[in-house]
Structures are given as structure tokens and as C-alpha cells.
Image (cartoon, helix red, strand yellow):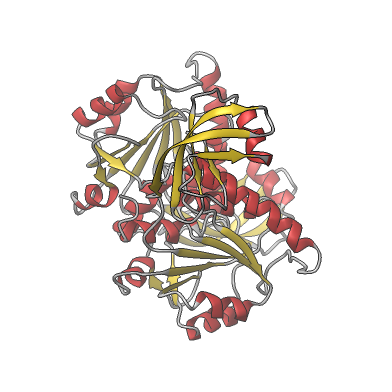
Length: 246
Length: 246
């Protein structure tokens, strides 16, 4: 069933009016009068609607039901990923949204081979990634659109991420604990932050700084993961362990 | 470190000779004399080598060390995925190989919107997917190249998959157990088969046939997963639960 997000929903209103890109999308989908779709406020509530009128630019629908969204994880998992090249970031946003991440923040670290200029390229890039997040959120039936952000300061990123209860830093070498023991050491998990590196990984100093910030420095098995695949593993493991894949 | 697979390795030989695509790849990588790489026999043994001579078509290397491969999961996980369109199958092969699947078999089911003709298109398509598996196996440091196959008969696929000890059938509706309880019900896990559907999912009859074949019909959480993402979740969960992400 098609799904749309609208920031301002009046749950008391018997009707919704849709304009802009979503109205165009409804036209592209060739939805007919009487077909149903959901409209989500991105904040825990969704409306089951039926299409009553459309001129291609404005869509009117009757509200059949107002109900709470049940697709969100009980544990917010915040993804922090080293900024990577090309479509790797698209992939991270799409898959982490689909799997259930709460938000996705890219960051700059020493071995990043690309960097966003907060004054120039960052806004356009983030707007594009935010649209990928919205599309994936619609498709997977999410209750929120995960926010996509960028932090240019590694230490600042660590400070923000360290506010979560379960703190995982994925690192490919050295003294590490297993993902399983790190997750199970914090039970019940109430919130989680996962940090993964860019293509070139982290420097030993960056790993040490994460350890000092309270992160469990974890392995993810003996196989070498691409940077765009890495965030999916701890995200899946946390959702699995906390009963959010039931 | 670059990695290559060679079927016939003599572990007693002090030297290896590489020809064909791998020799060309070494040229493309601009590897210099003295640089190291690994050669894996795809069957549990790898050689640490150093480049001694290359003319672009033939590469000679000295063997520095013969050692067992340690990157394979202790539990073989066999992936069975409904055949999907376009690059979705590429993605399934690349990511499942990277994560550690033992092999990947696509199959035909009622709602598949593409089908391979065993007499025509299947060979070329599987050869291309097998190359994707090999590339991903090299990049992720695997000890085997996961075999990519295709089964045109759904019931035959069920019979083959049912030979594994842990049997998971991922289904989006109806009476299901959680992924966690299905995995934990079989402990210790010795082998696993995971079945996921094509774009349109399974019919109720197909799910019932899987149940009759001994499969646990499982949910994967309340979010709707793309067919190319679905296999990654149970694969990750099984590797996580069996200590193969340590």
C-alpha cells in the first residue's frame, strides 16, 4: 500500500489534502478513486485513507482510520558512518532506513577520501540523501523519516554518539570485543549508537579516542566488509537481540 | 592485501604461477616486485605470496607461508532466494558472499516476474553471478567462492534446503515465529538454510509447503524489506547468534 509522510496532520479531520511531489507521485502510480494508502505524520501516528478526488496537482482523501504506527524499533539505533565516495552513502541511507535505524549521520575522519564543505556542497548532498531516506521510509512502512546529517568534526561526533547507552565502535584490528558480548553487556538496551569507518578505516588514534569516550571497540567477524555494508551488521544484530525483528 | 583463488595449489611447491584474468588483474593493480598477496585454494588453505616476476600475462610468486583459512563461518548458511529482476540478484550475491554465506541458490516460485530458461539464459546469467561471487570473495577474504545456482522447481528447492538442520522460511504475513526464537530453538546450530521470496512474495500455498517440509515460518520485524535486502537479515542473525561475527 502506498505511503506518504505529512508533517502536519490533524487527526481530528475527516479529510486530508495532498499537494506537491506526493500528489504527483499518486498520479504516477495511477491510483484510482477508492484506492487506499497511508499518510504518516512522522511522529507515531498514521492515517488510513481512501482517494476521493484528484486533479493531478491536488489530491483529496477521506480518513478511514487513525492509528498508532507499530513499525518503529523500541530501541533507537543511531548510525554514524565515515563519509564514503559516490553511491556508497546512498546505499547506507537506503538500507539503514529500510532496516530500522533512527537516524544516519556521516562524519569526517582522517582517512576519509571525500569531505563535505558545510558552506557549499553539504546542503545539496544532504538534501539528496534525505530524499533517499524518505523514499526508503515510505517503501518500508516506517513511522519516521530517519534524519540524515553530517558532522565535520570527529571528536564532536564522538561526543554526540556517546550520549547513547550502548556504544559500539566497529574496528578491523587490534584489541576488540565481540559484537555479541558488547551488546549483551548492556541489557536491556535502551538506545544505541554504532560507529563505522570510511573506505580506509580508522587510525589507531581515532579508535583510542572512541575507547576513551566509552565505546566498546568491536569486531564484526573475520571477513572484510565494505564500508557501505558495515553499518548493517551491528544494526541488524542490535534489532535482533532486542526483539525488534519479531 | 589482494587475494586470488586457484583451484589447484600444491602446498609443497615454493612457487606459484598465475595466468589469465588474475595475472591481468595484478597488472591493473600495478603491483610491484616484492609486494605480497594471498592465493586461496577455495578449500581451506591459503598461501601468502610475494611477487617475483611478471610480464603482464604470467605472474611468478614465491610462497612465504602456507596457512589454514580462518575467515569461514563454522556454520554453513545456505541462501535460497526467489529470482528477482535486474541487479537485485547481483546485490544478493555480492552482499551474501561478503557477509559469509556458504552458497546462494535462486529459485522459481509462483510470483516471480522473471524466470531463467535452463536451456538458454541460465548458464550465461549464472556465470555472471558466479564472477560477482568470486570478486566479493576476494575482496572480503573468504576461504571459498560461494557457488551460485538456480532451481526451476520450487518443491525440489524445498527438498534440497530441508537437508539443513536450521530451516528458516521468511514470510511477511500470517502465523509466524520470531527469527530469534526459531534460531534459538536449534542449538547448537550445525547448518542452516534460509529461504526468502521474490518481489511479490510467496503464495499461502508455498508457505504451507515450506511448513510441511519442516521449515520454521518466520517474521523479520514489522518493516517491509526489499527482496534483495531480506536474505541479509537472517544470515546476519545466524552468524551473530552462532558466534561467527566475533
